[in-house]
Image 1 (spheres, rainbow over the protein chains, first blue to last red):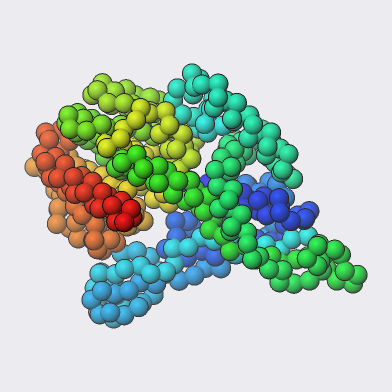
Image 2 (image 1 turned 180 degrees about the vertical axis):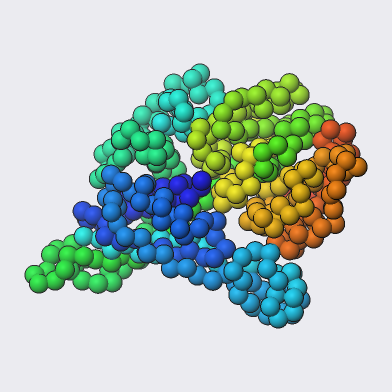
Length: 113
Length: 319
C-alpha cells in the first residue's frame, strides 16, 4: 500500500518545515492531488491519520484539492479532460492521448499554531 | 529500523547488511544523532510505520541543499504572527504557510542522484515491474546469461522476503544484491542507491532492477532507471493494461512473456497490445518466452537501441 509511503512523505515535509519555523502543531494540511496521480484520496486520508500519530501533525485536518486529468488528443489536436487513463477522446473517440496535467501530488499549504 | 542497515527483523533491509563495513554503520548512527538534534517530534516509537519513517529520514542529508532551495520564497498568507513569529495581541496565532512541494520530491531527488551516478558510470539501468509470477526472474536469468558475454551485468533483486531470486541470478554467473522490503510493497530510490554501492563496478554495462511483484505501487517511485519495463504473462489475461493503467503508462516497453503457452490458452495478443496502447500510445511491445528463448533476439536489439540512445543523450550533454 504505497499510500503509506506517500503519507510518510507528507509528514517528512511537515517535519522539515518545523526545522525552519517555530510552530507547536499543525491544524490542517492542504494537498493538491491530480486525478491521474498514483494515489486515491480516500486511501491517503486513512493513511495520513495513522502516520501523523505522535507527530506535530497528529489530529490535523487533511484537505485534499482534487484536480482534473488533462490530455492532448493527438488525433483531433484538442485539450480534453479525462478522469482516468485509457479513456477515449470525447470529441473524436481516439485513444491517442498524451497526458498533460493531473499527475501531481503536492503539499500546498499548512495551517499552523 | 534502518533501510540501509536492516538491523531489525521484519523491516526493510539490504542483503549483506550484517557484514557491511563499519563505516556505513558509523554513518547511520551519525544521521540518527543528527536528526535527534534537529527534530521537534522525531518519532522514536515502537510502531513499525514510525520506524519506517525514521529509516527514510536517515537519508535526508543527501538532498538538504535541494530542500533548502525548495523552501525559498515561502510567504505568510494570514496573520497572527509576524515574520519573526511574534504574537500580535487580538489576532489568532494560526498561520497559513504556503509549501508547494511535491510529496514524492525527496524520493525523486535521490532518484535524480542515482540517475546521474548511473550515467557517470556509463551504466544502462532497467526497472522490471510486473505482477507476481509473470516470469521476471526467469526472463532475467536467461537475459543475463547471454548479455554477460558482451558486457558487465548486475542485478538488484527486490522482494518482501527471501534471497532465492538473487541466488538464481548468481547461479547464472552475474553479481546480484537482494533487497528485502519487509512489509513494503515497492522499492524506493534510497534503497537502490545503497544496493548499487554494494555491487561491483559495472562500467559500460547493464543493471537490471527486479522490482517487487506488484502492478500498482512501484509505478509511483522513480528509482533513477533509464526506463521501466513491464512484464506481462499471457496467463494473466488481455485486460491487465486497462486494470492497472498507471504501470503501463509509466513503462517504455511491455514484454509479453510465456508466449510458448499460447496454444494452450485463449489469448488475444492483438487485444492486449491495443489495450496497452490505449493507456500508453507510444509503448514498445515485444513477445517472448523466457522458457524457450523465443523473442530474446528482439529484446537484445531493443536493449542495444536504448544503450545507443543513452550514449547520444550523454554526448549531447557534454557538448
